[in-house]
Amino acid sequence: MEWLGLNHMHVYMVCLYDKIPADKMGKPFGFMNLVTAHWILVVIDVAAKTGYFMDPQGNSPAEHIKELVPKQPGSYECGYYVMLYMRDIIVDPSLLLNNAEMDEVRYERMNYVRVLI
Image (cartoon, rainbow, N blue to C red; front, side, top):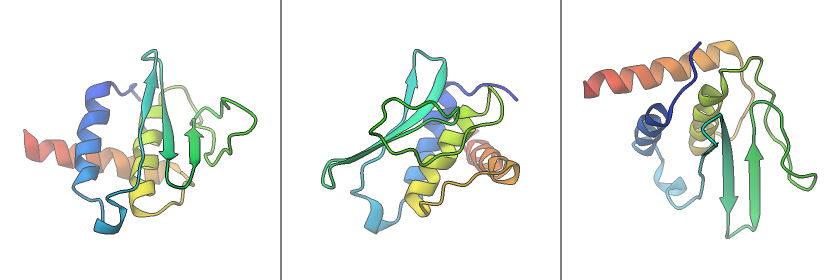
């Protein structure tokens, strides 16, 4: 499995934007790639005064931040996990992952890119 770069993540975010339900359009979410070494997802909901730090490697930024994400099994899956987190936040907040779900995200991104080529 290869590490995903910024372009892969950007294309998937555009793909997800097309799928955002109208009632979720104003909800905040975001992503980060710190020092281009590892993808994490940071979600900040200003209206609810809530923030989440989601790291597939299980790292915790601070004790007071609630972790909602399982640890990734290897060192290259972080981009796929973050794409799935982004999609789940938009569609369904369930964040449990397995290999079949990771493959689903890979195929979804691949099929979206295939149409653009």
